Structures are given as C-alpha cells and as structure tokens.
Length: 188
Image (cartoon, rainbow, N blue to C red; front, side, top):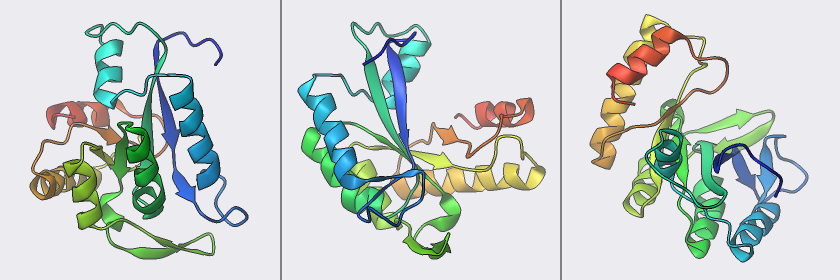
C-alpha cells in the first residue's frame, strides 16, 4: 500500500455485482471485492469502524498503523446478498449509507433492473453490528424541502433501527454551510 498522510482512510464502494459484464462503472464485481477483502485480511491491514476514523481525525484515537473503514452507498440489495456475507466472513465492520426514498423498491437504472434493501435487511445489518447512515441529496442542493426530508428520514430510521443516527452522506457536490449547520443541529 502506498503512503497516506493520515493513518485512517475510508474505502468507499457504490455496489457489488454478480454480473461481470453489465454493471455500472461505480460497481465492483463481487469476486474482485472478495479478493480485496482477502488481501486486507492476509496483510493484517486493520479494518476499523467509521466511528474510529472519526475519533482518529478528531485526535481522540491513536492508530499504530494504516487503517481503513469500509463504506457502501445507496442500499442496493447486492450489498445485503453479496457484500454482507463476505464482510461477515472476514469479521470486518462496515457502514452502509441507505437512500431512504428507495427502501424496498425496484427501479430501472441505466437500463438495468435494480432492487434496494428493505427494512428487514437494514435492521439485520444494524442488529449484527453494521453501522447505518443516511445517504442523501447533493451537498449543494440544500433547500427547505430537503431540510424537512432529512429530519423526517432521521426520525424514521431511528424508529426502525432503535438507535441514534449519526452519519449522513451527501451523494455529490460540496456541502454548503447551511446544510452542515442543519446536520450538526440534528446530531449528525
């Protein structure tokens, strides 16, 4: 592994796919993902919870060697059916950022049928030690409507999972000060 300035970094994934030839550019073939996990395991590279990355960056945790946190965006079903079993096998923690407006839905995405996790899947991930966060709007797309959605979805997730939501991931763009202030007020 090359040199990194910090001893903690995040490996961010969009989705894992069984289809080697027909998946989006931001998705990774599950066998390649499994090889990556195997490499990290065999090289004894620490995979740490996102909470530890935050603690390290805040100066509240000292890390002895380069460590990584695994995060997954959007809440596609393959993150439950393919990714989660691999992560469990290796005993790695992970954070799943879930798009609240797609829970349990099926949609067409670039001509491909895509299914999203339902509440049962998300609850199982949470119950088994995975961190759940909200995956939301563009960081620079902050409006009163989005503010209301963030508050509503945070409340819904906390009800469904029985735990406080502390992570919110913007989908794209630079987060505005207004949005950062809202997220801080809401406890993210």
